[in-house]
Length: 175
Image 1 (tube, rainbow, N blue to C red):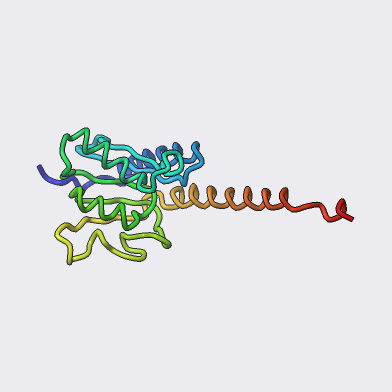
Image 2 (image 1 turned 30 degrees about the vertical axis):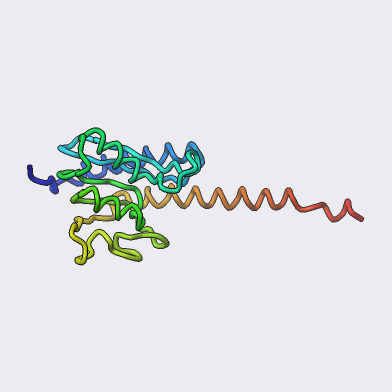
């Protein structure tokens, strides 16, 4: 079967919106809002969202969860003929898992300048020294994908600052 690489812009945006829905599931649980879907033959076969805090497992990134579900759906560790859509550029761990699962194509929304391993800091997915290289595309709904993360971190900083304010003693009452 031939790898589907001819998704229309409308289809790419549809699947990225599905990944954003997964990111929303993370957000509801106060997790870093990253979401992922894996598509084969125009159908979603795997979904995932960050669940590190909830599960106390460092490896439960959105891509890992989606890969696990797709492996079960396909009854195969190889996810040939698929495309992985993720809201942010995959990290080193997830890029390794994508390569090991033989996923041929990744489409992501926003770059990950601190941990990205698909072009920002590293480019594991296209490293010629490795035996599997992945086609990459970025920028699909980039603004929406970046905004959900920026909002999450901004709100987190506000919460931290408010807690610090509450913890500081009232100097006037100490006099």
